[in-house]
Amino acid sequence: MLKEKEIQEVAIIGGGPAGLAASIYLSRYKVSHIIFATEIGGFMNETHKIENYPGFPSISGFELSQKMGEHTKSLGANIVAQEIEKVVKEGDNFKLITFNKEEFLAKKVIYAVGTISNKLGVPGEKELKGKGVSYCATCDGPFFKNKEAVVVGGGNSAAVAVFILAEHANKVTLIHRGDKPTCEPSYIDEMNANPKISLIPNANVVEINGEDRVESVTLDTEVDGSSAYKTDGVFIEIGSGPNTSLITDLNVDLSERGYIKVNPDQSTNVENFYAVGDISTNSNGFRQIITAGAEGAIAAIAIFEKNRKK
Ligand SMILES: Cc1cc2nc3c(=O)[nH]c(=O)nc-3n(C[C@H](O)[C@H](O)[C@H](O)COP(=O)(O)OP(=O)(O)OC[C@H]3O[C@@H](n4cnc5c(N)ncnc54)[C@H](O)[C@@H]3O)c2cc1C
Image (spheres, protein in one colour):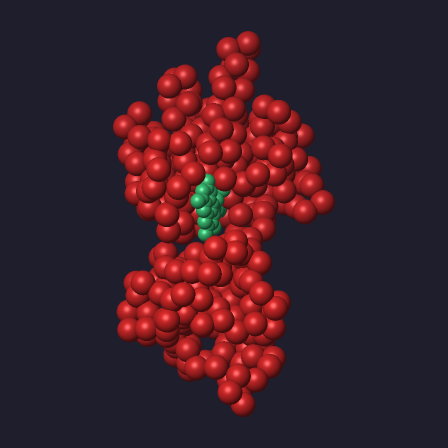
């Protein structure tokens, strides 16, 4: 059992592929550590099918998450299912404060929290979140059996959300702001070929309406003579951005776009603070499972080497 005030050698924040790979390598190097993660797998859980991860020609994101989680646990990783609210310095250590106001100390941190979904910022979005407004089709799609849903966005994530929802819902509408969605052209062909899927181009959602649940969205254009479009759910897929709200007190160097600037060994300008995966500027800005895992592994070996030289 973990003692709250025990000083951990390494605390990993995040249980996506970056955090899990870091843990796997740290376990094998016998560097003691804990992982804070409320959800094992991170963004992989939002991925319908993964077809570019070596060794798995086609695997669901959920299954790959489970496999990575099991692998990590099999090596004895200590996973604490708590979300960290804040990280601050306390002497030479880092103090990690959870949303439950518990405090943990660690000598080193591997920050692997990934990115967070962008918000539309329209009236009704916050109020109806979890009541029909969602940012994860994989997680919430099954609740839309025999219902109608709209997806807002035009990129690959939006297209994937449409396909996931079309497996459950009666009708799925993609609302996108341009003439054509910006996703891969083959996705557009696939959408056009599916009778359950329709597209509304050149439109923005300006309000989400409903009392206890989503009932409709208001568009800035008219469809069949009305700007109100009836729906049971709104899936917002308009990209994501770096999640650095936890570490504002640490003065970690960020890129212009807010990602954490890292050195080749994933260290940052703050001694003993490493950043890995989608949150970092490494891997040439390519944000994938394989690059996230690689960065986790690189941080782990950097820490092992640093400890060995002491
Ligand atoms: C729809 C979609 C499809 C994709 N398809 C593919 C694909 O086919 N192939 C591919 O290689 N990549 C794909 N990606 C990208 C891939 O999923 C990401 O690059 C990868 O998951 C990033 O890993 P990560 O560990 O950096 O972050 P994430 O996977 O985002 O994991 C972050 C982790 O941090 C945890 N966390 C966040 N905040 C806190 C906190 N405050 N306290 C504690 N824990 C916290 C989260 O719960 C989560 O466990 C896709 C992404 C999306 C959104």
